[in-house]
Image (cartoon, rainbow, N blue to C red; front, side, top):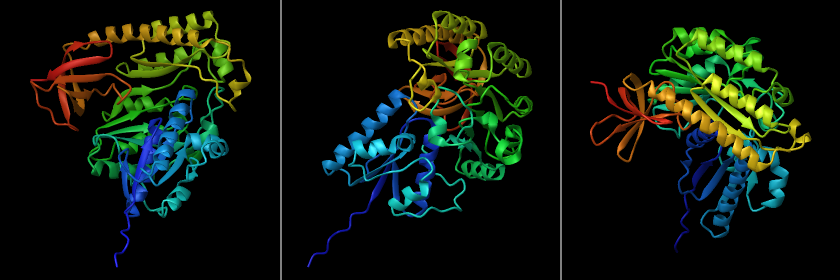
Amino acid sequence: MRTKTLKKNKINVVTLGCSKNIYDSEVLMGQLKANKKDVVHEEEGNIVVINTCGFIANAKEESVNTILEYVEKKEAGAVDKVFVTGCLSERYKPDLQKEIPDVDAYFGTSELPNLLKALGADYKHELIGERLTTTPKNYAYLKIAEGCDRPCSFCAIPIMRGKHRSKPIADLVTEAEKLAAKGVKELILIAQDLTYYGLDLYKKRNLAELLEELVKVDGIEWIRLHYAFPTGFPMDVLDVMKREPKVCNYLDIPLQHISDAILKSMRRGTTQAKTTKLLTEFRAAVPEMTIRTTLIVGYPGETEEDFQTLKAWVAAMRFERLGCFTYSHEENTHAYTLTDDVPEAVKQDRANEIMELQSQISWELNQEKIGQTFKCIIDRKEGNYFVGRTEFDSPDVDNEVLIDATKHYLKQGAFANITITDAADFDLYGEPAS
Protein backbone atom coordinates (compact mmCIF):
# COMPACT_ATOMS: atom_id res chain seq x y z
CA MET A 1 0.00 0.00 0.00
CA ARG A 2 1.39 3.45 -0.92
CA THR A 3 1.72 5.95 1.89
CA LYS A 4 0.82 9.56 1.31
CA THR A 5 3.86 11.76 0.84
CA LEU A 6 3.96 14.55 3.42
CA LYS A 7 4.75 17.78 1.61
CA LYS A 8 7.35 19.86 3.44
CA ASN A 9 6.15 23.38 4.05
CA LYS A 10 8.17 26.30 2.79
CA ILE A 11 7.31 29.69 4.34
CA ASN A 12 7.68 32.72 2.07
CA VAL A 13 7.92 36.07 3.91
CA VAL A 14 6.92 39.05 1.74
CA THR A 15 7.95 42.49 3.04
CA LEU A 16 6.25 45.79 2.15
CA GLY A 17 6.99 49.28 3.46
CA CYS A 18 9.93 50.70 5.35
CA SER A 19 13.21 49.51 6.85
CA LYS A 20 11.47 48.87 10.18
CA ASN A 21 9.35 46.26 8.40
CA ILE A 22 12.44 44.71 6.80
CA TYR A 23 13.88 44.37 10.31
CA ASP A 24 10.68 42.77 11.65
CA SER A 25 10.62 40.27 8.77
CA GLU A 26 14.24 39.36 9.49
CA VAL A 27 13.42 38.72 13.16
CA LEU A 28 10.44 36.56 12.15
CA MET A 29 12.61 34.58 9.72
CA GLY A 30 15.31 34.12 12.38
CA GLN A 31 12.70 32.69 14.76
CA LEU A 32 11.34 30.35 12.07
CA LYS A 33 14.81 29.11 11.18
CA ALA A 34 15.55 28.43 14.87
CA ASN A 35 12.36 26.33 14.85
CA LYS A 36 13.83 24.30 11.95
CA LYS A 37 11.34 25.78 9.49
CA ASP A 38 12.18 26.16 5.80
CA VAL A 39 11.86 29.93 5.30
CA VAL A 40 12.61 32.20 2.30
CA HIS A 41 12.23 35.91 1.56
CA GLU A 42 10.11 36.81 -1.45
CA GLU A 43 10.64 33.51 -3.23
CA GLU A 44 8.28 30.61 -3.91
CA GLY A 45 6.68 29.00 -0.87
CA ASN A 46 3.41 27.21 -0.14
CA ILE A 47 2.79 29.24 3.03
CA VAL A 48 2.92 33.04 2.68
CA VAL A 49 3.34 35.67 5.38
CA ILE A 50 2.77 39.25 4.13
CA ASN A 51 4.31 41.95 6.34
CA THR A 52 2.21 44.98 5.40
CA CYS A 53 2.57 48.75 5.50
CA GLY A 54 -0.35 50.97 6.55
CA PHE A 55 1.31 54.39 6.60
CA ILE A 56 -0.21 56.36 3.70
CA ALA A 57 -2.74 55.76 0.93
CA ASN A 58 -0.48 54.31 -1.80
CA ALA A 59 1.33 52.05 0.70
CA LYS A 60 -2.01 50.73 1.96
CA GLU A 61 -3.14 50.14 -1.61
CA GLU A 62 0.02 48.17 -2.39
CA SER A 63 -0.49 46.06 0.75
CA VAL A 64 -4.14 45.30 -0.08
CA ASN A 65 -3.24 44.41 -3.70
CA THR A 66 -0.50 42.06 -2.50
CA ILE A 67 -2.90 40.33 -0.09
CA LEU A 68 -5.47 39.91 -2.90
CA GLU A 69 -2.78 38.54 -5.24
CA TYR A 70 -1.83 35.80 -2.76
CA VAL A 71 -5.45 35.03 -1.89
CA GLU A 72 -6.02 34.42 -5.63
CA LYS A 73 -2.98 32.11 -5.66
CA LYS A 74 -4.46 30.27 -2.69
CA GLU A 75 -7.80 29.85 -4.49
CA ALA A 76 -5.91 28.54 -7.54
CA GLY A 77 -4.07 26.02 -5.36
CA ALA A 78 -0.63 27.62 -5.89
CA VAL A 79 -0.26 28.34 -2.16
CA ASP A 80 -1.83 26.60 0.82
CA LYS A 81 -2.06 29.34 3.44
CA VAL A 82 -1.85 33.14 3.60
CA PHE A 83 -1.12 35.05 6.82
CA VAL A 84 -1.02 38.84 7.14
CA THR A 85 0.94 40.84 9.72
CA GLY A 86 2.39 44.35 10.11
CA CYS A 87 0.99 47.88 10.21
CA LEU A 88 -2.00 47.54 7.89
CA SER A 89 -3.14 44.49 9.84
CA GLU A 90 -2.65 46.30 13.16
CA ARG A 91 -4.64 49.30 11.99
CA TYR A 92 -7.47 47.71 10.02
CA LYS A 93 -7.78 44.11 11.25
CA PRO A 94 -11.62 44.07 11.64
CA ASP A 95 -12.10 45.66 8.20
CA LEU A 96 -9.65 43.29 6.55
CA GLN A 97 -11.22 40.22 8.17
CA LYS A 98 -14.57 41.33 6.75
CA GLU A 99 -13.37 42.40 3.29
CA ILE A 100 -10.78 39.65 2.65
CA PRO A 101 -11.97 36.67 4.72
CA ASP A 102 -9.93 34.12 2.74
CA VAL A 103 -6.74 35.10 4.59
CA ASP A 104 -6.05 32.37 7.17
CA ALA A 105 -5.29 34.85 9.98
CA TYR A 106 -4.36 38.49 10.60
CA PHE A 107 -1.80 39.58 13.21
CA GLY A 108 -0.84 43.02 14.56
CA THR A 109 2.65 44.49 14.97
CA SER A 110 3.17 43.11 18.48
CA GLU A 111 1.79 39.61 17.93
CA LEU A 112 4.96 37.79 16.81
CA PRO A 113 4.51 34.87 19.30
CA ASN A 114 0.93 34.31 18.04
CA LEU A 115 2.03 34.46 14.40
CA LEU A 116 4.80 31.93 15.10
CA LYS A 117 2.28 29.65 16.81
CA ALA A 118 0.06 29.78 13.71
CA LEU A 119 3.11 28.74 11.68
CA GLY A 120 3.80 25.81 14.02
CA ALA A 121 6.74 27.49 15.76
CA ASP A 122 7.56 28.64 19.31
CA TYR A 123 8.81 32.11 20.19
CA LYS A 124 12.36 31.76 21.50
CA HIS A 125 13.26 34.55 23.96
CA GLU A 126 16.95 33.64 23.92
CA LEU A 127 17.36 34.67 20.27
CA ILE A 128 18.50 38.25 20.90
CA GLY A 129 19.86 39.58 17.65
CA GLU A 130 19.37 36.33 15.72
CA ARG A 131 18.00 37.41 12.36
CA LEU A 132 18.01 36.16 8.81
CA THR A 133 19.14 39.37 7.09
CA THR A 134 17.62 40.14 3.70
CA THR A 135 19.85 43.12 2.81
CA PRO A 136 23.19 42.79 0.99
CA LYS A 137 25.64 41.15 3.41
CA ASN A 138 27.65 44.34 4.04
CA TYR A 139 24.89 46.35 5.76
CA ALA A 140 22.00 45.70 8.12
CA TYR A 141 19.32 47.71 9.89
CA LEU A 142 19.49 47.87 13.69
CA LYS A 143 16.15 48.86 15.22
CA ILE A 144 16.97 50.57 18.52
CA ALA A 145 13.40 51.42 19.57
CA GLU A 146 9.80 50.70 18.70
CA GLY A 147 6.80 53.05 18.68
CA CYS A 148 6.52 56.81 19.04
CA ASP A 149 5.31 59.29 21.67
CA ARG A 150 5.18 62.33 19.35
CA PRO A 151 1.79 63.92 18.65
CA CYS A 152 2.34 64.82 14.94
CA SER A 153 -1.09 65.51 13.48
CA PHE A 154 -0.60 63.74 10.14
CA CYS A 155 0.97 60.51 11.39
CA ALA A 156 -0.72 57.18 12.15
CA ILE A 157 2.43 55.43 13.42
CA PRO A 158 1.53 55.65 17.16
CA ILE A 159 -1.80 53.95 16.28
CA MET A 160 0.05 51.09 14.60
CA ARG A 161 3.23 50.85 16.66
CA GLY A 162 2.24 52.08 20.11
CA LYS A 163 4.27 54.13 22.60
CA HIS A 164 8.04 54.58 22.37
CA ARG A 165 9.99 51.61 23.79
CA SER A 166 13.80 51.69 23.72
CA LYS A 167 15.86 48.49 23.53
CA PRO A 168 18.59 48.11 26.20
CA ILE A 169 22.11 49.07 25.10
CA ALA A 170 23.47 45.64 26.07
CA ASP A 171 20.96 43.86 23.81
CA LEU A 172 21.78 46.15 20.88
CA VAL A 173 25.53 45.58 21.33
CA THR A 174 24.90 41.80 21.34
CA GLU A 175 22.87 42.15 18.15
CA ALA A 176 25.61 44.27 16.52
CA GLU A 177 28.25 41.68 17.44
CA LYS A 178 26.21 38.90 15.86
CA LEU A 179 25.73 40.94 12.70
CA ALA A 180 29.46 41.74 12.54
CA ALA A 181 30.27 38.03 12.89
CA LYS A 182 28.17 37.45 9.73
CA GLY A 183 30.21 40.00 7.79
CA VAL A 184 28.05 43.10 8.26
CA LYS A 185 30.21 46.23 8.06
CA GLU A 186 27.59 48.98 8.24
CA LEU A 187 24.83 49.40 10.82
CA ILE A 188 21.90 51.66 9.94
CA LEU A 189 20.24 52.70 13.19
CA ILE A 190 16.49 53.00 12.80
CA ALA A 191 13.50 53.81 15.01
CA GLN A 192 10.36 55.86 14.67
CA ASP A 193 12.34 58.47 16.65
CA LEU A 194 16.08 58.16 17.42
CA THR A 195 16.02 61.44 19.36
CA TYR A 196 13.89 59.88 22.10
CA TYR A 197 16.17 56.86 22.57
CA GLY A 198 16.75 55.95 26.21
CA LEU A 199 14.26 58.31 27.86
CA ASP A 200 12.04 55.45 28.96
CA LEU A 201 14.83 53.08 30.07
CA TYR A 202 17.54 55.43 31.36
CA LYS A 203 15.51 58.56 32.11
CA LYS A 204 17.69 60.55 29.69
CA ARG A 205 18.29 60.81 25.96
CA ASN A 206 20.98 58.18 25.52
CA LEU A 207 21.76 57.92 21.81
CA ALA A 208 25.33 59.19 22.30
CA GLU A 209 26.09 56.50 24.90
CA LEU A 210 24.65 53.82 22.62
CA LEU A 211 26.96 55.01 19.81
CA GLU A 212 29.95 54.95 22.19
CA GLU A 213 29.25 51.25 22.85
CA LEU A 214 28.51 50.30 19.24
CA VAL A 215 31.77 51.76 17.90
CA LYS A 216 33.63 49.20 20.05
CA VAL A 217 32.19 46.31 18.04
CA ASP A 218 34.93 44.75 15.90
CA GLY A 219 34.10 44.48 12.21
CA ILE A 220 31.60 47.33 12.15
CA GLU A 221 33.11 50.22 10.18
CA TRP A 222 30.15 52.52 9.59
CA ILE A 223 27.22 53.46 11.83
CA ARG A 224 24.50 55.57 10.24
CA LEU A 225 21.66 57.49 11.91
CA HIS A 226 18.15 57.45 10.46
CA TYR A 227 14.91 59.15 11.53
CA ALA A 228 15.86 61.65 14.21
CA PHE A 229 13.28 64.16 15.42
CA PRO A 230 14.31 67.85 15.55
CA THR A 231 12.71 68.77 18.90
CA GLY A 232 14.96 67.82 21.80
CA PHE A 233 17.76 66.44 19.61
CA PRO A 234 20.63 65.30 21.91
CA MET A 235 23.53 67.51 20.80
CA ASP A 236 26.14 65.24 22.46
CA VAL A 237 25.54 62.88 19.50
CA LEU A 238 27.40 65.43 17.35
CA ASP A 239 30.47 65.18 19.62
CA VAL A 240 30.54 61.41 19.08
CA MET A 241 30.03 61.87 15.31
CA LYS A 242 32.95 64.30 15.21
CA ARG A 243 35.23 62.14 17.37
CA GLU A 244 34.44 58.61 16.19
CA PRO A 245 35.38 57.76 12.59
CA LYS A 246 32.93 54.82 12.59
CA VAL A 247 29.93 57.13 13.05
CA CYS A 248 29.09 58.41 9.56
CA ASN A 249 28.87 62.16 9.07
CA TYR A 250 25.24 61.68 8.14
CA LEU A 251 21.91 62.40 9.75
CA ASP A 252 18.40 61.69 8.52
CA ILE A 253 16.08 64.19 10.22
CA PRO A 254 12.58 64.51 8.70
CA LEU A 255 11.52 68.16 9.09
CA GLN A 256 8.17 67.96 7.18
CA HIS A 257 7.63 71.72 6.67
CA ILE A 258 8.94 75.14 7.67
CA SER A 259 5.98 77.56 7.58
CA ASP A 260 5.18 78.37 11.22
CA ALA A 261 1.43 78.08 10.63
CA ILE A 262 1.81 74.61 9.10
CA LEU A 263 4.32 73.45 11.74
CA LYS A 264 1.86 74.50 14.46
CA SER A 265 -1.04 72.67 12.81
CA MET A 266 1.21 69.63 12.31
CA ARG A 267 1.94 69.73 16.09
CA ARG A 268 5.67 69.51 15.47
CA GLY A 269 6.62 71.50 18.58
CA THR A 270 9.03 73.77 16.71
CA THR A 271 9.23 76.89 14.50
CA GLN A 272 11.13 78.01 11.41
CA ALA A 273 13.56 80.00 13.58
CA LYS A 274 14.25 77.06 15.93
CA THR A 275 14.69 74.61 13.05
CA THR A 276 17.08 76.91 11.18
CA LYS A 277 19.08 77.47 14.39
CA LEU A 278 19.32 73.69 14.96
CA LEU A 279 20.60 73.04 11.44
CA THR A 280 23.10 75.91 11.79
CA GLU A 281 24.38 74.27 14.99
CA PHE A 282 24.68 70.91 13.19
CA ARG A 283 26.76 72.48 10.42
CA ALA A 284 28.96 74.34 12.91
CA ALA A 285 29.60 71.22 15.00
CA VAL A 286 30.21 68.83 12.07
CA PRO A 287 30.85 70.91 8.91
CA GLU A 288 31.29 67.80 6.74
CA MET A 289 27.91 66.34 7.77
CA THR A 290 25.37 65.34 5.13
CA ILE A 291 21.81 66.12 6.22
CA ARG A 292 18.91 64.17 4.71
CA THR A 293 15.39 65.42 5.27
CA THR A 294 11.86 64.72 4.05
CA LEU A 295 9.07 67.22 3.51
CA ILE A 296 5.29 67.06 3.13
CA VAL A 297 3.46 69.39 0.71
CA GLY A 298 -0.29 69.85 0.35
CA TYR A 299 -1.05 69.59 4.07
CA PRO A 300 -4.56 70.93 4.95
CA GLY A 301 -4.58 74.71 4.85
CA GLU A 302 -1.21 74.99 3.06
CA THR A 303 -1.48 78.25 1.13
CA GLU A 304 0.61 79.30 -1.84
CA GLU A 305 2.43 81.62 0.58
CA ASP A 306 3.21 78.69 2.92
CA PHE A 307 4.55 76.72 -0.02
CA GLN A 308 6.70 79.60 -1.29
CA THR A 309 8.12 79.98 2.25
CA LEU A 310 9.07 76.28 2.17
CA LYS A 311 10.56 76.52 -1.31
CA ALA A 312 12.66 79.58 -0.45
CA TRP A 313 13.90 77.84 2.68
CA VAL A 314 14.89 74.67 0.76
CA ALA A 315 16.82 76.89 -1.67
CA ALA A 316 18.57 78.65 1.23
CA MET A 317 19.40 75.52 3.28
CA ARG A 318 20.82 73.49 0.37
CA PHE A 319 20.21 70.07 1.88
CA GLU A 320 22.53 67.39 0.57
CA ARG A 321 19.67 64.87 0.47
CA LEU A 322 15.94 65.57 0.37
CA GLY A 323 12.72 63.71 -0.37
CA CYS A 324 9.27 65.23 -0.79
CA PHE A 325 5.87 63.59 -0.30
CA THR A 326 2.33 64.73 -0.95
CA TYR A 327 0.05 64.83 2.10
CA SER A 328 -2.11 61.75 2.67
CA HIS A 329 -5.35 62.24 4.66
CA GLU A 330 -5.24 59.44 7.24
CA GLU A 331 -8.25 58.49 9.38
CA ASN A 332 -7.84 58.51 13.17
CA THR A 333 -5.08 61.11 12.96
CA HIS A 334 -5.54 64.62 14.37
CA ALA A 335 -5.21 66.14 10.86
CA TYR A 336 -8.14 64.02 9.68
CA THR A 337 -10.43 66.50 11.47
CA LEU A 338 -9.15 69.19 9.07
CA THR A 339 -10.40 69.61 5.52
CA ASP A 340 -8.10 68.03 2.95
CA ASP A 341 -8.41 71.20 0.88
CA VAL A 342 -5.34 71.22 -1.38
CA PRO A 343 -6.29 69.61 -4.72
CA GLU A 344 -4.33 66.47 -5.63
CA ALA A 345 -2.91 68.10 -8.78
CA VAL A 346 -1.64 71.08 -6.74
CA LYS A 347 -0.04 68.74 -4.22
CA GLN A 348 1.75 66.91 -7.02
CA ASP A 349 2.87 70.15 -8.71
CA ARG A 350 4.31 71.41 -5.43
CA ALA A 351 6.17 68.14 -4.80
CA ASN A 352 7.57 68.28 -8.34
CA GLU A 353 8.72 71.88 -7.85
CA ILE A 354 10.56 71.01 -4.65
CA MET A 355 12.24 67.98 -6.23
CA GLU A 356 13.22 69.98 -9.32
CA LEU A 357 14.84 72.57 -7.07
CA GLN A 358 16.54 69.83 -5.06
CA SER A 359 17.91 68.07 -8.15
CA GLN A 360 19.64 71.33 -9.15
CA ILE A 361 21.10 71.72 -5.64
CA SER A 362 22.20 68.06 -5.66
CA TRP A 363 23.83 68.48 -9.08
CA GLU A 364 25.77 71.54 -7.91
CA LEU A 365 26.93 69.81 -4.72
CA ASN A 366 27.93 66.71 -6.71
CA GLN A 367 30.06 68.77 -9.12
CA GLU A 368 32.19 69.80 -6.14
CA LYS A 369 33.06 66.13 -5.55
CA ILE A 370 34.72 65.62 -8.95
CA GLY A 371 38.42 64.92 -8.41
CA GLN A 372 37.94 63.97 -4.76
CA THR A 373 38.54 60.46 -3.42
CA PHE A 374 36.02 58.80 -1.07
CA LYS A 375 35.95 55.57 0.88
CA CYS A 376 33.02 53.65 -0.63
CA ILE A 377 31.25 50.43 0.24
CA ILE A 378 30.50 48.32 -2.83
CA ASP A 379 26.91 47.08 -2.50
CA ARG A 380 26.39 45.17 -5.73
CA LYS A 381 27.12 44.75 -9.42
CA GLU A 382 24.40 45.91 -11.79
CA GLY A 383 24.84 45.56 -15.55
CA ASN A 384 28.23 46.98 -16.45
CA TYR A 385 28.69 48.84 -13.18
CA PHE A 386 29.76 48.15 -9.64
CA VAL A 387 27.46 50.20 -7.42
CA GLY A 388 28.89 51.73 -4.26
CA ARG A 389 28.09 54.41 -1.69
CA THR A 390 30.05 56.99 0.27
CA GLU A 391 29.52 57.50 4.00
CA PHE A 392 27.20 60.36 2.98
CA ASP A 393 24.71 58.02 1.33
CA SER A 394 22.19 55.54 2.68
CA PRO A 395 21.08 52.54 0.59
CA ASP A 396 17.96 52.80 -1.60
CA VAL A 397 17.30 56.50 -0.94
CA ASP A 398 20.53 58.39 -1.66
CA ASN A 399 23.20 58.91 -4.31
CA GLU A 400 25.22 55.99 -5.63
CA VAL A 401 28.74 55.78 -7.00
CA LEU A 402 28.99 53.90 -10.30
CA ILE A 403 32.29 52.27 -11.35
CA ASP A 404 32.73 50.77 -14.83
CA ALA A 405 32.92 47.00 -14.32
CA THR A 406 34.30 46.42 -17.82
CA LYS A 407 37.47 48.29 -16.79
CA HIS A 408 37.78 47.67 -13.05
CA TYR A 409 37.21 44.79 -10.66
CA LEU A 410 35.89 45.47 -7.16
CA LYS A 411 34.84 43.05 -4.44
CA GLN A 412 31.18 43.27 -3.50
CA GLY A 413 30.66 43.91 0.21
CA ALA A 414 34.14 45.42 0.59
CA PHE A 415 35.38 48.99 0.92
CA ALA A 416 37.33 50.72 -1.85
CA ASN A 417 38.78 54.20 -2.30
CA ILE A 418 37.10 55.72 -5.35
CA THR A 419 38.10 58.91 -7.14
CA ILE A 420 35.08 60.75 -8.58
CA THR A 421 35.46 61.45 -12.31
CA ASP A 422 31.98 62.72 -13.19
CA ALA A 423 28.70 63.61 -11.51
CA ALA A 424 24.99 63.79 -12.40
CA ASP A 425 21.99 65.03 -10.37
CA PHE A 426 21.90 62.07 -8.02
CA ASP A 427 24.75 59.77 -9.07
CA LEU A 428 28.51 59.93 -9.06
CA TYR A 429 30.90 58.15 -11.43
CA GLY A 430 34.34 57.08 -10.38
CA GLU A 431 37.29 54.74 -10.63
CA PRO A 432 39.48 53.05 -8.02
CA ALA A 433 42.11 55.44 -6.66
CA SER A 434 45.55 54.59 -7.97
